[in-house]
Image (cartoon, rainbow, N blue to C red; front, side):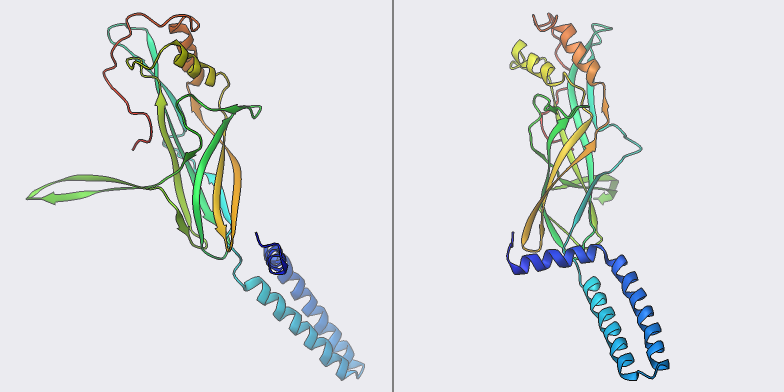
Length: 287
């Protein structure tokens, strides 16, 4: 960070630009008062003072106009982007084995959280990364579900759908592109970044013993309600780090944990006759 005279001047100009409408209205009011004073001086036969007053008013308005019209450094605004068609951000899934009706097996959980980033400044910026630092509970206690790595970095996802004809045979074509960043964002531009992860428990995998299952259950003791996210971007020569908190819509966390405890008899024994899962899932990023 530039702490010298130039840096102080830039921060002072930035504070002025943030109050641009107030300055414009104040300068307009000053100009109107100056015009009134000029007429008063002219009526009093003080033409020299009237000219000086009017010149000062015009110069002041010109300086204020210059200050508020010079592009300000980039400033990013972060907020959660709601998805009405899929309102849940973190979903815990339970699997029913057809051979044992009524028994629900906790399995994977998926995170799909969208964050919109808007450049409300006057210049381009480079967003280095956007990362999920931690989940928070109702009283801001830190929560990190087992198997979910922190920080978890967002990606820019572009999905395309169209019709492709190859050799006279056509069909629908789906394409998903992921851009891990960094991203260039111009003034008044916005991008949507996604935080995505699939984790959970695979009962048929050798690693899942009582110890691992206990870690998963302990990490889900408190209900997840919020997420703390960090963004790092450039404002001219300075690197800016900004943290913010968004709400998280969670589905079936309490049921998921209660079934873990129920099947393991409060983490004292692994359940007998663990079924082979007919649908295996990878742990990590997913499309």
